[in-house]
Image 1 (tube, rainbow over the protein chains, first blue to last red):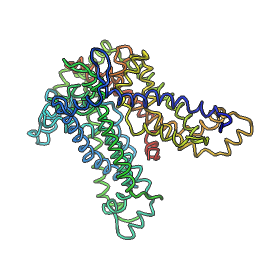
Image 2 (cartoon, one colour):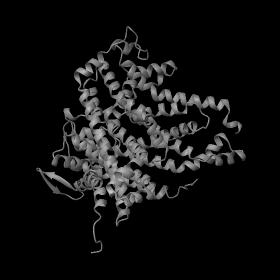
Image 3 (cartoon, chains in turn red, green):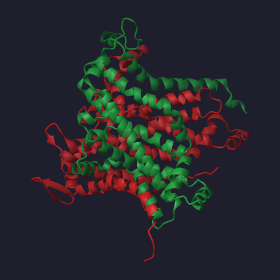
Image 4 (cartoon, each protein chain N blue to C red):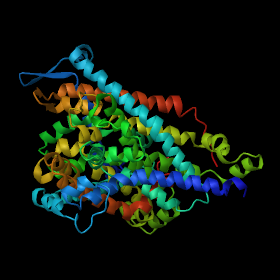
Length: 304
Length: 279
């Protein structure tokens, strides 16, 4: 025996966390991957190998829904990257101005939507955009743009983009805060050195600050990616499990939920559900790997 | 200081952008709360007006309190959130202490194992989690939710807390050991009080996602007596969708506790995010 005695206090300190984490998170995760290889025939679970994945990608009834959900999910993600993160960075850049008054107030107020639940956010926007209530059309007509109004959440071509923008409205506080923190950690001497060289205002932002906060932008991108690819709640709260109109707002999370629990006449299927969850796992893993090995290692980090 | 940083035009532009965005952020919340206090007629006639003597009405709140069991939902959410936070902090701090304080074989590996869950969402394992809860008879209990949220919160908690525990002075702990304190006493009496700010950060980070989660209550605990406030208001609004007074009041009642929590903890939250705890 190499270890003469076990240090019991280490075991006691680690045991609760490791047990709960393993039993409720890691074990089910792998069990879900395993269940994807089974199916149920006459209430008996039997091993079918990759058949579920063949159905998911090969059977047009399934593969159409899957690619639709995946495509929608990418669009959802792209809107977040193109709208949420630039707005977040812009707000943070303004807020981090050293002499700005009421910065604390703005920061607190802009973060309010982020703390609300998807249920509140989904229904609130549903009401505001509703043609019955008429707040959105009234506001648009007050600035002379009434012709632009459409019941966005009810139109196939607009619904997904509208929901993505609602989600942007909700979460813009997170990139704002993280970038704000990154901007505050830039030492004053660097900015002053730039000023001496005549780099001020906007050009100071583009030439000095932006390169320095790139690592934070990387972190925000991967957080957005993981968050978007397991999103579910907002779509479910605003459009229901069917992700209407005509599945135009279906993303992987709602697709998984419908497959797992069933809807209307279709019965729930935990094994197909596991197959979809495995696909989501693979997508998230690929994203995280691209970030860890492709992006993070190339970003220069500056130590102040 | 140079001119560009004091330019009044720039300051004006900055305030314009910020005020505009603050309005965008707060307007929907404002509209919901204001209209929840109005009669049905004035909700539709003048949605943007404040309630006055004529249009003031509490009928929506009366429906909500009569029909929905919001106090029960609130209590369930409270129990789930507080218990989950307690276990995340206790178990997380204990594991973080073991990882940061002792050298033992497999230390790094254990740290990596626990960190896996930071990037992988627990929802991926939902099918098997439900199966596990069915087998153990925990479906439709608050305990199922508490276990899931504890597991979900532990990875980041261990990560953040072990960073902070590395900064606690070794001399202090060794002085305790010389005085004959056990490792447990050192942890609970000496180390825990010193990392309290970090624990507060972890608590605030976890609090909002747990309180607001819809996925796991929907799947693991949909029964009436264990509904959380988030699920309860979702179901309630779904049923009363044409009763605008009730829907607006239910939304306002769901907003209220979160806003209170936010006002109480916003400093801690903002300090936590900006102190680089999530770098």
